Length: 575
View (cartoon, one colour):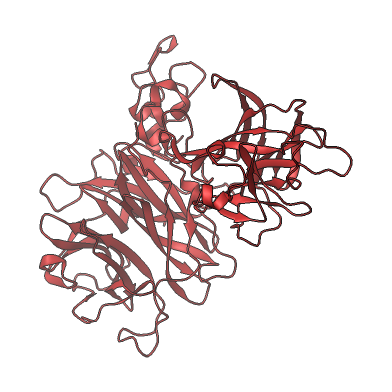
C-alpha cells in the first residue's frame, strides 16, 4: 500500500537492491512493507509478502491464518444424549423452538409439514467480523420418501431473529439434507446454489463456513475429522445472524426414522475487520433549544475521552467555545457546571478555536484538551489547556499555550489528535492544499515538532487528486488517533465535493502507514438521517470490547454528534 508520503519513491530500493536488482528477503518490515513495491522479487509486496506478515498492522482487514483469533466453540449440542420423545426445550433448554420439533431415533427431527419447524440458538453471531463454522451430523430417513413426501433437516444462519411464531426460515446461508430428493443442498439468500447426491441413510458430518469477506465453503468430514471441500459460494454478511436448526419431517412413524440432526456445533473466530462498523441511527446530543444555556447553533466539532476508570466526556465546539458534556439516559448532555465546564477562546486565538481533542492524563488525574487556534488571517496552530484535578470538568485558562505550529511551506496546522507523544494534524499550504502530517514531542516536553528534515516528508496522507470517485478526492483532514494491541489506528475525513466521509489508516510505529480499506470509506452516510449529507470530525477510543468512535453528522441544515462501533476490531491480542 502507498502511504501518500511524498518521499516514498526514494524507498523503492533503500537497503533492498543492488546493481542487479532486488535483494532476496529484503521485504522484512518497516518502510519496505508500505511502499507498494515487490522489493525482494518474490511476486508479493507489502502485507502479502511473507516478510511483512508479522506486522500487526497487516492483520487489520485480513483473514489469513494467524490474524484472526483462535476459534472458540459457542454451540455444542448432542441430541443423541436426549431420550426419544423428550421435548427439545427440555433436553436442551438453551434453545428456542418453533413448530413441533421432537427427539426421535437419537436425533433432532424438525417436525412441521407444510411450514418450517425447528429450533434456534438465542444469541446472534456476527458474520461481518467473524469466521463462523457450523458442523453437524445428519442422516436421511431410513425408508424411501417419494411422491408428496417432504422429509428434510439442516442448519442455517439467518438475519431475521427467529421466534416461536416462525413458519419459514429465510436462510442467509444453510445446508439442508433432503430425503425426498436424496441430496444435500446449499442455500444462499433462500436460493439453491449447489446440491450433491446422498444415497444412503447413514449419518454424515458436514461443515458450513461463513467468512467476513462473503465467502461460503462446504466440507464433508470423515470419521477422523479430515475435511474434503465440496463447494464454495458467496453471501452478503450482515452484523447479526442466528443459528437455526430446521426443516420439515412427517409425523412419527414406527417403521422408519425421519431425517434428523444429531450433533451440532458452532465456533467463531474474530477477525479485525474495520468495514464491519455500524453507526447508530440517532444523534447523541439533544437538539439545542431554549433550555440550553449555550445557545442554539449546530454542533461544529467534537472529541471524546475516557479515563481508565470509565469516566466519559464529550467535548464539542459551539459558538466559538468548547463545552464538556457527560453521559445521559440517552446519549450525552451538557454538564450542569456550565459555564465552568466551558472553555472560551484565549487571547492568542483572535480568529477562534475549534476541533477539541480530549486526552486523559492518568498520571496527573486530569484532562488535557488539545484544540485548533486561529489568528486574524485564519492561520492555525495547535494549543493545549489543562483540566482541573481529579478529572474535573473545568479548565485552567492560565495553562493554555500553543504546542505545535506550521513549518516550511505548511503555513497552518489544525485539527489535532494525540496519543502519547505522537500527534497527527491537518496541514495546509499557502496554496490551500491539505494533507495529514505526523509530529512528535520528546518525553516530558510539551511542544510537538516535525521529526523530518522537511515538513513535506512528514506527510502520511494526501487527497486522491484526480480520482473522480474517491471519497477524499478534494481534501483530507480531521484525524482521530488511537492505539490498541500494537497497532496505531487513524480515522480521517475525506471530502468529495460538498460531502465528507470517514476513512482509515493503520501503522505499527506511527511513521509508516497503510490504508487497510484500499481507498474506500469506512462506512456510508445514512439514508435520510441526521448524517445523510456528511460524517465529519471523528474521534476514537479503544476498550476491551473493541473501538468506539464518535463523529459530527450533518443533514445539510443541522449538525449533531453520532456514534459507531465495531466490536470485531482487535478484541483479542494479535499474534
